[in-house]
Structures are given as C-alpha cells and as structure tokens.
Amino acid sequence: MIEMDVRITAGDLYDFNLKHAYSRPATYLSSAVGAVGVIYGLATGYYLLLIVGAILLLYLPVHLFLQSKQTVALSPVFREPLHYVLDDNGLTVSQGENSTFVPWDGVLRATSTGRGIFLYTGPANATIFPRSQMGDKTTPVIQMIHTHMDPKKVKIRT
Image (tube, rainbow, N blue to C red; front, side, top):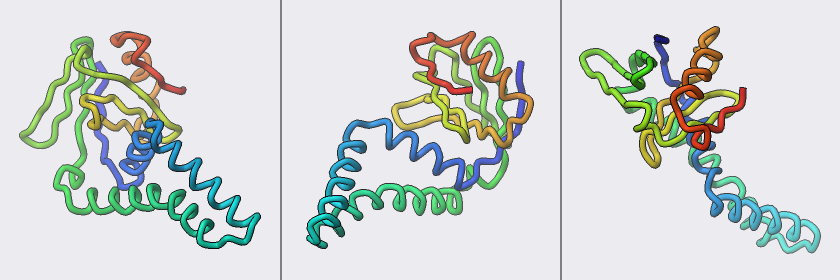
C-alpha cells in the first residue's frame, strides 16, 4: 500500500492538459499547419499567413495555461490536498469527508510526462501524480501501476 498527500497546482494541471490535448492527431495537424504558415509567411513576406500561423501555434498552449490557472483558482477541489492510497485493489482518492475508489480495471490508461504521472479514470479525467510531490514514492507507484494494469494501457516514462 502506498499513501501520499498531493496538492495540485496550476502548473500540474497545465502539464496534464497539454499532455491530453497533444495526444490527439488533430492537435498535431493544427500545429503543423501553423508552423508551415509561419515559415511560408516569413519566406514570402506574406505577413497575414505568418500571423494566422502564429495564432494556430500559440492559441492552444496559451488557452490551456489560462484555463488551468482559472480552474485551480476557482475550484474548491484544488484548495486542499488530495490523499491518495494505492493498493492491490485500486486507487482511493479522498479529501475531507469525500472519498472515491477506482478499481485497477476501472483505470483506462496510464501516461506520464517529465512532471507527472496520469491515471485516466475517464476519457478526459485523470488522477494527477505530480513527480515533484511524490519524492521517493515515484518508483513504487510506477511499479504498482505496472503490476496491476495491462501493459498495453501503460505508457509511463521513468
């Protein structure tokens, strides 16, 4: 059993939102079109195309950053630390009087970035494990995830 308390910051939520957004092909297509627009606009002096390309490249990251800051500032869930318990049965997330249990077979997939580990419990919902707050529990958490989940669903970089 692994227990830890985690306080989700705007940076942690932004990291998750970026990872989630850039896991879709449409996001990469939009970025590629924006990059081509910037390069072509610079090469030809067609500055309208340069501006449109820059907007395509910058809109999503800036929007997600502002949205993450606003969500953390306004949501009561992010005001207090979350208590995580991982055991052989699944994941329990509790805060105050509220508690949610997700069995391992209810976790859709596990992914990571350099800043965090994410256990998806819904198509766009995940439990966020910020690496900066996990300390020496990072390796045991990753091992527990690998032990209890189908390897095809786990894409965690150590």
